[in-house]
Figure (cartoon, rainbow, N blue to C red):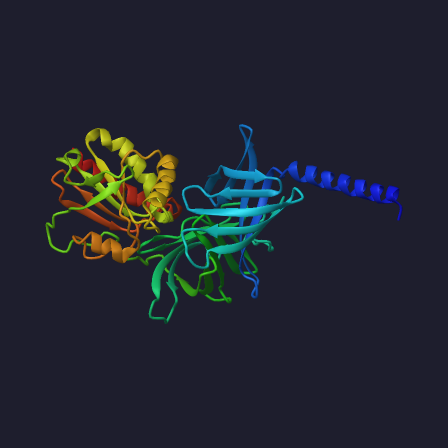
Length: 416
């Protein structure tokens, strides 16, 4: 081959290379509706779908993830050539993806709050509004209403819940949630197809998938998946009168009139105690929580509103935080994201501890800590008026409204 021909081939290769680089540098992503999928089990083809929208806002890309009535704004997005990465708000998780053309994404979702089974394969397609890619039965009202649910039936660790489902509320056809004694499963969205129930939720911490079949009877048999680390069966029967244990009866004081006392560092590494002058002769809400806990986040949003309305009347709030890291700076970073997201004005304390057992040991005035969050309401003398275990948030509808009415009656009394 002559030098001239070699030169021409080389120049063509260089031109092709620069065309490729230019196209990558200028890669764009389609604005509009997308359908994302997390692959929970490749062998059995178990996939968790969710919907999101990509939009422009003030010259920057944003993502809005939708679960039924919930809309989650994602604005921590990094675009570099064909990389399209984004962090979930508040929760310590992120997506790392590659843009394929302008209508597809492929990559992984990484949940840093977990140490094992924390990376799940992810893909997304532009222009798909269906959550579950299945025929839809909008006229099927079978699942409407209240159900008595048993998770892991006939097992030692079986537990009770209430299932509440609504058909035809959204374009996908079915919404609902499950209430347990320690919280709720938040906003579930899906459809009924050929008599089967399909519901999913993705919020940055939870990756929930429910599938069930009524088998042409009044009994519902299903499967529940939480990410790639958990799978269990569940069974349900219609029971409008079923109720769970009162959440104010699950946790108590070791001794009647027990003195509430603790001391932990705030975000500025200043030691804070309820015996500090700031809290003298003031009613106080003590929230035992973690920024990794979605039910805690729902409660935190609610308490932020409570604080803005009742702090002028003397109410104080202290959040005692059990993060999934013993590293102070890492915990502080997670809590600052939470504080900024909800414009929190009350103290957030870092315990440096993780888990319910650690919470029990560090708060010995409680007989146990069954769930995050656990919330204590103290009057001006710091005597306990309520200890509420768990939190059933706005996804539970009427249950949430009833809770707010009961809770705020107590707040009004202690702030008089």
